[in-house]
Image (tube, helix red, strand yellow):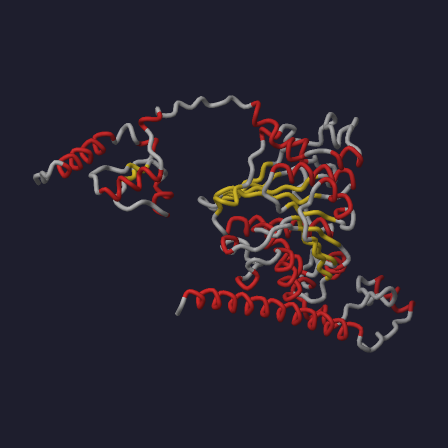
Length: 424
């Protein structure tokens, strides 16, 4: 195949992926409208129970089906959520409350994938998804809501298609934007509950402040490497994020570059669970408590005494100085970065210029065939991902204790450069 053939093949593959995505979206819309026809399509009217009989049934501990206000569940709802309805602590009332609730999931990444899929599957009424990024192939190991056909397309489009595909009766709303203080109030006020599935400190402060201003509960989760944590802010007297972390210096940002894919899935599922509990008023939510997860040991730990709402908090305290106007003008990115300059600066002692070598200079050494030893001081797992052929890996923190090995290697290189072979 010629040079042009490869480009034509890529173009065809992109077109196929685009057509498949359009087909999936059309299929989900068809299923949605079919479900609407089934729900409203001439179901027989329920038999009316006389008020006197209903009163007698209630008196002996039995309950008649509600006759007003759409009390009876449709056959489709019963079939889809039958396992929910049979849970004593959840039941019909829980399912009804969930179907009337609206939830905004901020972030369609690893956390947001699990949250959005489960909320859609479980039958939340309206589901909003906010994300300004596009799907990348490096997302798919943890962001299971996306598929390869959507690589290069907006994450909200991909996530919404997956949610509609799993439950066409849910009203899924797409917000293809990066949520900032300038637009957050307009988006958040449309929903009952907010889920923080982001991975930046600035976003966490901004979402928490926004939820306090609009009196919305915030389900907050985060992961880093093989650990995760979860809590519920601004609900039933629980603190806001600033009560817990008054200073950004105390925060730890999630690292999307260092995460085992299943860990955000675990925390995301728990976020969906907390969202359902808050929406349905079932069970005991994580208000004022924090759940910690250690994937290596498979242990969960609940911290029962996290900071309570602070009376001196600048946002939710007795004397708050944050208004909607000041919120819109606040620069959360600069705020999150401001403490970095206050941290002690680590003084570096770089090698003198004559002891350093550039990539191009090293390429000339390779091309010349000159005998040398290339030492790679990165961590072992980085070295295993990619390395230069014939290099030697000694992690920097182990270098001093492993100097004898390095000296032996240098001696062998010197022998080769002088035409001598090392004796066994």
